[in-house]
Length: 209
Ligand code: MN
Image (tube, rainbow, N blue to C red; front, top):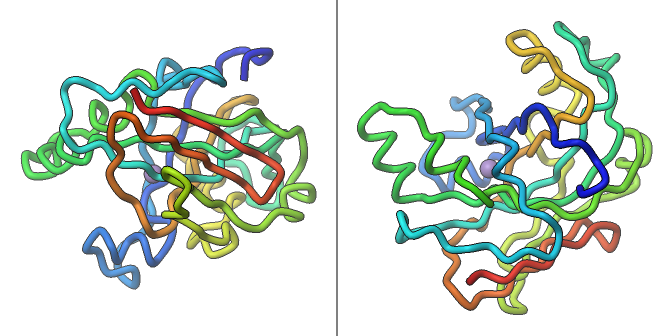
């Protein structure tokens, strides 16, 4: 991340894997993927620790494929969408605050966009063609694989979700997209070590303090 300018926005997609939608209590046949955003201050520089927030008692990991927008614009057609790189990241989520927000019909921003909530590995520069050579995103918690999924199983493809977002909000080169999490989300605790991977291409190591 460090050599890049901060992205103008971080776009996150929710419920983009059927098994994760089901584990959160939603019918994947009837629930559509959707979007939310994190501020640039959610990014965590490589090598920094994740500081467990003092306003939550239930922080979850969501491992996700992250792509960097190549060409910006509004109303981007899926066939014209381009990325300039990819990485693996974690959409850290205060599940208790999120649940409360849902119950109260309020936005999720604080549950999802707090400082340090978007740890991300170094990016590999590359296009969709390069990304297509990769397969699996995984997360190990204290040496045990807790999440593992094929990114091709996502419900909306990356070009489709770039097209959908750009109907509402212009894409800017360098924007990051967290493309949703496969099943197996769970709690983290202080003292945990997390290792997220995209095959053996991208690796993010994170200590929870
Ligand atoms: Mn997520």
